[in-house]
Length: 222
Image 1 (cartoon, one colour):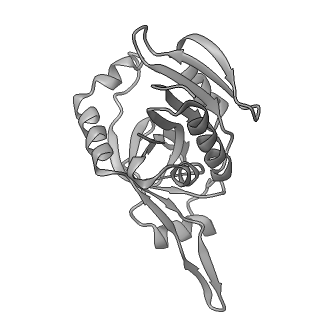
Image 2 (cartoon, one colour; image 1 turned 45 degrees about the vertical axis):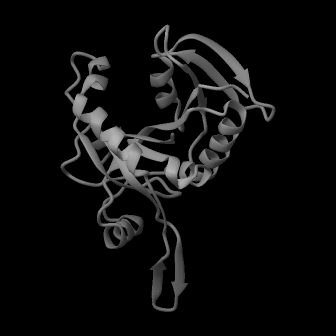
Image 3 (cartoon, helix red, strand yellow; image 1 turned 180 degrees about the vertical axis):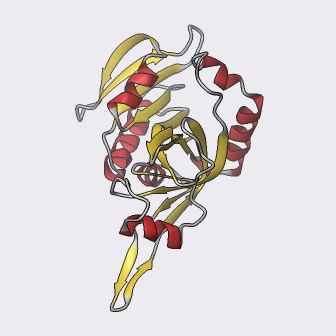
């Protein structure tokens, strides 16, 4: 076990590559199960950052989150990546920081249809306050390319399921519209990260195209 690390997990290679490009002095650490972590720093005096690829889905993200915690005893765990925007006011490249995460596929099947039975994980007040302060300060955005449009930061629920949603009129889309009307974004890993972290240490957030809209997400725990 090592102290003081920040663990960053991603689901897709393009997300992994974006994070990896910002790290320096990379070395490789291998978990006994075979999971490979690349460890580096964002800047010379910064804390060590351990980066790993989980693959898509809540089961994979839960397993890798627990594995990372056991191996590094990190100061923070962050799941970074892309999510589908569910609101027209969320633009391509905006950031969504979750106030809570819905596992939206939970349901009971009745003769007259399905009844939603979600699980919900709320973000700790201290983490929500920290995220809002960071968003207001704006220093994090200075690392973006000069030709990027300045992204807006949105706070609200994120819905995490087990299927890629690429339709505004499908059964899954109607389910979310009927039962999760306040959700800002949808993705496939946040519930797994939340399951692996105690609720008082959960943080979440996101960026990804769906119907020409996109947002960034960052799920994790502190």
